[in-house]
Image (cartoon, rainbow, N blue to C red; front, side, top):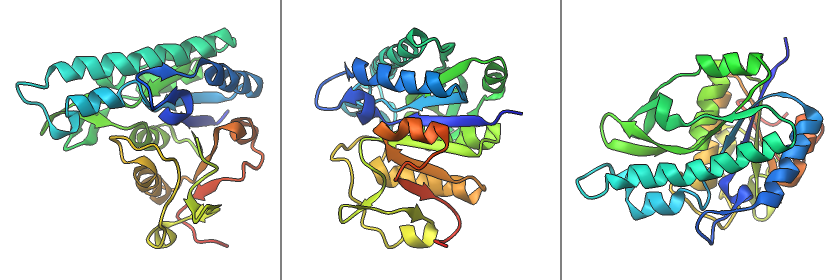
Length: 253
C-alpha cells in the first residue's frame, strides 16, 4: 500500500508576512509543479502567513471570545480560506486533484489544543487519489470560545491518525538553525540545549519553537519529521537529501 506523505507549507513560504494576505502565486505554482512530478499519496497542510495572522492578532482570538471580538472568527477564517483557495487552485492548475478542507468545520479544541478532529474522510480522499489541503485555522474551543489551531498541530494529529511515516515541513530557512548553522537532528535532550534562530517572521502560533514542540510529540509517537527550505521540497518528496533538520526521538547516531 502506498504510504501517505504529509507536507506542511509554512505561511511565510507562500505569503509575504509584511503585507496583508499577500499571496506568492509564483511560489505556489512552483511547489505544485514539484508535487505533480513526484505524484505522492499526499495530504497538504499550509500555514496562514499574512492571510489570517493579522486578523487573529487584531481580534485577539487566542485570548478567547468576548462580546467584542466574536466577528474575528469570521474574518480570520475568511482570510485563511482565501489562501487555501489559492493553494488548491495552484495544485489543480498542475493537474492535481486537490480540494480544500477547513478545520473550523471539523475540529473542536479545548484550551487551545485539539480535543476532536475528524480524519476518516481525509483517509478516504487519499485512497481515491484526492489531495486534501488543510490549513491553520480558527476553531471553536470548549474553554475559550475560540482559538487558533496551527498547521503544525494539525500535522501531528494527521500523521498519527493516518499512520504516516513521511512528514515534511517546508520553511523559509534551511532547517532549525543555531548560530546560523543547521542542526541536523533534534531529539528532546538536544532541544533543551538549543537557542533557536531562524525566520524573522513571528506569528500567533509560536514560530519555530512551537513547530519543534509539536514535532517532538510526533517523534514520541514514533514518526520522525523533516524541516527544510522550500527550495528542497522536490528532494523531500523524492526521498533524497534535503540538508535540513530531522526531528526524532532517537539521539544523534
